[in-house]
Length: 358
Ligand code: SAH
Image (cartoon, rainbow, N blue to C red; front, side):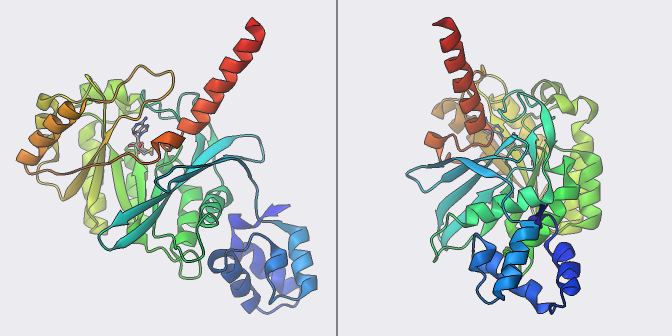
């Protein structure tokens, strides 16, 4: 069976032609999938019954299974998906009230596991298993859209789930194309943010080929020495190079950059480090997104106290950095990506250990 979301147009165009069907059928299928939010070819009621049957025979829409669906009181919902080969990924729907109304942001994954090895992160603990396909990325978007009430619409996408998006651009870019097309999800590119650990070659490729999206760069440290310890992949990549590529992306895209900084108690949260960070970012049109650490089962890191967070923020603000502390949503359901999969696997090990011990 062919997974249709891998390349909807390229797969359906010749398929319809072979059957003597007009090209407009492609538009009908797309409308059902993206706008009408159907789950099945059978529901595509303006297609002839025989065509619906044939589509269902030749193509599959859903390649994954929902392993868990969790909901938090703040409206956050999270899916743990099991892929055809048994790999697991997570994706999240966040509902936010903003002055202009509601936002419905989805956070999607690009890899099973992650090869970057950031020491505090749940996704990379077992390394990288594989890249996701375009179809598996599109599928997350559509599965999350299916969680909405009929009067709700997706407004934003953040590629901040499991994995390093810039290590899987070949699959990600066509998926984001489906997200931003008018006959796709219709989410404007400026509402789509790709978050990267900072891979210069891929940042350059994105700047040259697709500077439409917002770029977020995960810093986590104000100097190379500390960054090498927190973000091991950075040992080969100095901050100056990452910042130069980020600046280049800004020139090409005209979109304000975001820098992310996970605040870890006693590691990167001192006022002196805030000064160093402010100096590093000086002169840039950028937003600094500080994320107080979300504890991960089994890891020895801690969230800084409210006072430490305040002190860190005060230093940055006094130096003119645009800073935003990302308030945590969906804590109760381990909404930070990688965390649910992690907790389930730790629980699994504990219960297996329990059986062995009994
Ligand atoms: N590989 C991409 C996307 C990762 S997830 C990147 O590195 O940017 C998006 C953000 O969440 C990253 O900044 C990542 O460092 C951060 N993050 C990962 N685990 C976290 C945790 N336990 N608490 C808070 N932020 C975390």
